Image 1 (cartoon, rainbow, N blue to C red):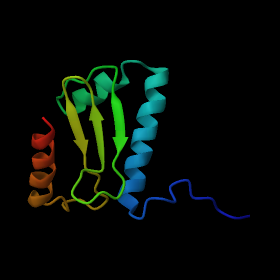
Image 2 (image 1 turned 120 degrees about the vertical axis):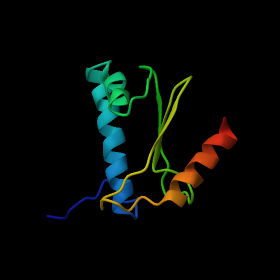
Image 3 (image 1 turned 60 degrees about the horizontal axis):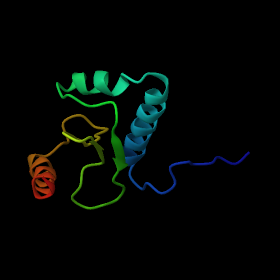
Image 4 (image 1 turned 135 degrees about the horizontal axis):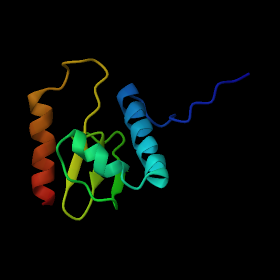
Length: 101
């Protein structure tokens, strides 16, 4: 039996995890309309129920995903290995958000 990789277009494992998270959040939103409010509370961020989800695959200099509503942008940077998030990565992501805002 051949294995089928539904994440074939993601070369980095981190992006596959991100896509999985976003997929679970989208499914969860169909079951529980408050799931995004609760998810935002984990990061002390107010998220509305109506969000746009973007997995930013393989774009250099961007976060792995964005959750956007009318008032908030939440960037998601997935790391598989603890302690590998670099300060220059955070600054680069914030500079992109500042250009959008």
